[in-house]
Length: 302
Length: 260
Image (tube, rainbow over all chains, first blue to last red):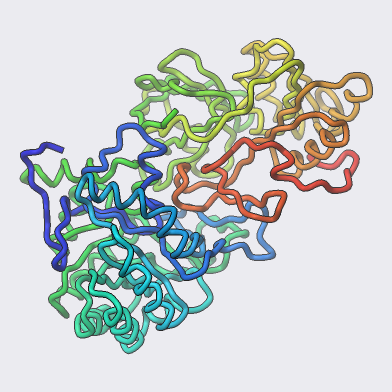
C-alpha cells in the first residue's frame, strides 16, 4: 500500500485502516497468513473477523456415517459449500493462545480485531461477549446469528427478529465494545436490521453463507457431505447485495458487505449498495493477499 | 519454508494413459522450498472455478519449474488436464510438510495418485517404489516415475501388468525375502492403513501422506480433517500431509492382503 493513499474508514464508530476485512471462517485467527506465506500485506487488512468462537471447544462436523476423511467442503458451479460445523478451540483458548498474535498485529498495523461468536442460547452469547469484553486487543464482537451448520442456535436466532433483538440486547448489556450482527441472506433483512439497530448494535455484517441442501444444488453431489451446508463465493454476491440494499433502506447502521467479493469492482458494488466496508472470505483461499489486491484497486479512481 | 502465491503457466502436459498426465508448471522461483511430500494449491485454469485444488509436488525440474501427476478425478482435475501449454494459473506453494530424509533402504508404497510425491525420491539410492493400479491401462504413473530414474515394481489388481494383486500383497511377498529400513506410503486411506499395519508387524519405520478435499490448503478452513490414532482430528494441511503412521493408524489386527 502506498502511504499516500488513506483508505481509512469509520465503521460504526470504529476506525479501520482500510475498508477491507477478512471474513470469519476464512482467515483462521490471522496468524496463519503470516506463518504460512511470504508476500501477504497484513497492512492492507482493515479488520480480522475470527473463526466463530463458542464457550466450549468444538471439533466440527464429524457424523458417525461420514467417511474418513469426512467431506466438509466441496465446490459447485460458482460457489463453495462448507459443512465445517464451527470447529474452534473455545473462547478461553482463543484468548490465551490466539489473541496475543492478533493484539500485536493490531498494535503494529492498526487493524481491528473482531471476535465472531456463536451460542446455543441468549445466555451463551452474553457470556461469550462478557469474556471478550475484558480481553485486551479485541475491538468487538460479531454475532453469528446465521450458521447453517449446527443443530441448534445460530440460524434460528437469525430467522426471527425477536430472537435477534434478545441476543443483541443481552450482548449490549455486558459489553461497551463494538457489536456487529451477522445476518443470513435468507432472512427478513429489514426486520432483523431494525431490531439490531434498536437494541444497540453498531453494524450489520451482510451476509453469512446461504443455507442450502447440497442435494438440491450440487450437479455432482458429494455423498459424504452432511445434508445441509453453507454456500459462499460468486453465487452469493447478488444475494448479499440485495440484502445490503434492503438493510440500507431499513436502518442507519454501518453495513459491512460480504459475499463473493474477490476484486475491487465487487467491493464497489457493495459500497454502492450502502456498505461502508467489506469482508473477503472464500476468495482468500486462492489469494491470501486478496485484501491488498482489492485495496490497490479501490485506491484508484474509477 | 513459507509459501508464496506465484503467477505461473502450464508448460507441458504429458499424457500417461486414460485420464492421467504429468503436468509441468513454470513460474518465478516456483520450485523454491519444494520437497517430497509438499503440495501446492493450484488454480483451476480457464476461469469459472472458485477453489484452488491440492496437488502433491512430483518433481523439481529446475528452480522455476515443477511437475505434478494429475488424474481426472472431477471437474477441477479435468479442466487442468484439458488446459494448454501457455495457460496461466496461480499457484500457492510450497504447502505442508515433507517426508523425512530416507535413511538406508526405503520402499515407497504408492496407490494411484499416491505416486505423486515420489518423483523426488526416484533417483535416490536405496529407494524402490511399489506402485499399485487397477490394471495396465491405469499404470501410467509408473512410467512417469521410471522416466525420472525410479526403480518401480508395478502391481495390478487384474494382473494385466506386473505383480497380480494389491500393493499390499506385493509388499507382503517382497517381505518374505527382504526388508527395508523405512516404508513411505501414499494412496487410498485403506491401503495406507494396511501398509502401516504390515510395517508395524515387521518393526519397520513407516510414514504416510494423507489426502483429503481441501478448501484453503493453509490451515484456516478446517475442511481437510482426518481421524488420528487417538481418535482426535488432524487438519491435514496444518500439520501434515506427512505423518508417522503410528500417529494416524491405531494398532489393530493385521488383515493379510487388505487394501487396494
